[in-house]
Image 1: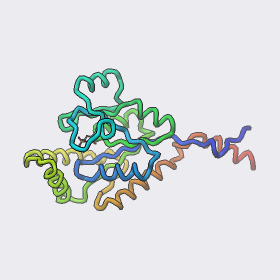
Image 2 (image 1 turned 180 degrees about the horizontal axis):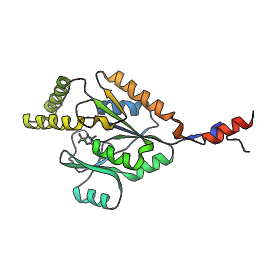
Image 3 (image 1 turned 30 degrees about the vertical axis):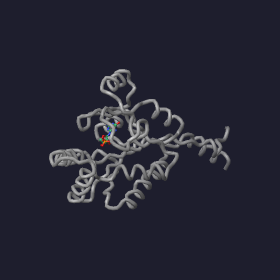
Image 4 (image 1 turned 135 degrees about the vertical axis):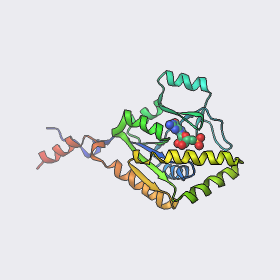
Length: 218
Ligand code: 5GP
C-alpha cells in the first residue's frame, strides 16, 4: 500500500469569526491577530454605510450603494449579509471560497446575524469568538471616548449602548468568550484558540492515510 508522506498532509482552512458589541476592543484584537498571523486572510465586507475618515475602500470595506448591494445578494455573491445600525453589511463569497480552497484561514469581523448564517452553511469550518468588555462602566467609558472623537450626540451614544446590550445577549451562540480586560492577554487568548483549532484532527486532510502508512511500516 502506498505510504502518505508527511509533506503531503494538508489542513483545511478555518473560518475564524470575531464578534462583539462596539467598544469591546474587537478591532484592536483583529488587527493584532492579522499582524501576528500573516498567513490569515481578513474577509473584507461590503457595506452601504458611509465611509468614515481614515477608512479605505477595498481595505476596511467595499463601500457600495443599496442597489449594488441588493444585486450582489440576488446574484448569490454574498456568503451572508445583515442589516446593522440601519446599514447593510455582507461578506463577498468568492474571496472566502478561494482562500479556504487553498487551505488558508479567514478572519471575519461580523455580527451575530452573520455568524448564525455562516454556522448554517459551514459549521465544521467555523470557529467563533465573542469579545466582551470587562464591565458596564468600562464599555460606557470606551463608547463615550469614541463618541467624543466623532462628535456623537447623547442620543446616539445611548443608541449604541442599547445596541451593545442586544448584541451581548448573543454571547451564548459562540464557541469561545474572551473578556477583554487587557489587550495583550486577550490577544494571547485569541491566538491560543486559533493554534488549538488548527490542530483539530477533523481539519487534517490525509491523516488516515498517513497513519496507515505508519502502521504498515511496523
Ligand atoms: P461598523 O460600521 O462599526 O464598521 O460595523 C458595525 C457592525 O457591523 C460590527 O459589529 C461589525 O462586526 C458588523 N459587520 C461588519 N461587516 C459585516 C458583514 O459583512 N456581515 C455582518 N453580518 N456584519 C458585519
